[in-house]
Length: 51
Image (cartoon, rainbow, N blue to C red; front, top):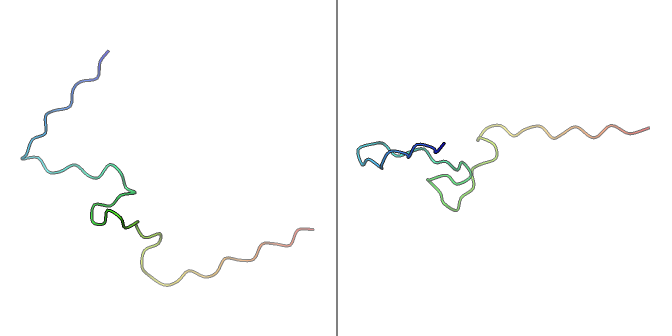
């Protein structure tokens, strides 16, 4: 059972979405922001003291 061959690249078709989200098309060497711009998150709560 062989997989069907994909259709040939048609210049009239819109470009496929980037299969690799870790490499945004807008910035090849610019990593995506970890968090969206907005209010700063509160500091993490301190770890509970272990008995």
